[in-house]
Image (cartoon, rainbow, N blue to C red; front, side, top):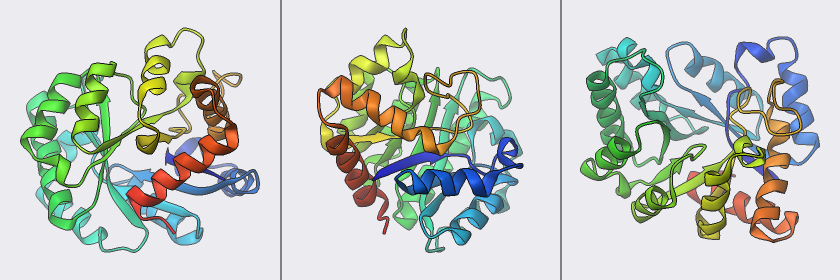
Amino acid sequence: MFTDTHTHMNAPEFDGDRDEAIERAYANGVTRIVNIGFNRETIPTSLALAEKYPYVYTAVGWHPQDAITMEPGDLDWIEELTRHEKVVAIGEIGLDYYWDTSPKDVQHRVFREQIRLARKVGLPIIIHNRDAHEDVVRILREEKAAEVGGIMHCFSGSWETAKLCLDMNFHISFGGPITFKNAKQPKEVLKQVPLDRLLIETDAPYLTPHPYRGKRNETDYVRLVAEAAAELRGMPLEELAAVTTRNAIELLKLK
């Protein structure tokens, strides 16, 4: 059994075969899927998937690239949605300094507001961090995010950054890049993360693992991530799948 802790199966790339792609993943052993709703458009469609499939869950939050669009009522909306039985986390939230779509000060404010909300409602958070390692760690620490913990989604930082996140009660999740030939840093970090803090994901339709790189990613390919992780850790695939699934169940309170 595999658990994909981060996917976007509600993305437009799946408009032609969404149900088939989800059912194919389940048939191939992906028995738990966490889909992400990250703005005004994707939150409702992610919730709809979670309501349709018993093995699909959702996180709700405001992506840093969309921080500029967040209005005061949106935070209230997210808080209301956290009462839904299929909402298991707030996310993805964080900072993105690669895409210049929202000013840094706005990203920081929206990030802090959502961490505070997570602490208020008692849900873990899913962190998006692109080229902002120092500020992400600093804000997590200042906002006492360790109280709820969560997931460092598709981790790309150093082992030093990973240790800081582990110390704040976070799990470290890896996706397709660990299958890339030249992705040395995430592979080295994966080898060192404690097994009880390790998670896997796809981030579909993005970051497609080898050998399908360049094509649409889908949650079914989490098996390829698991195979690469198992090889890097020198352990059987079945054990890696069981450990990462157990970690996801315990952290996100999945059925």
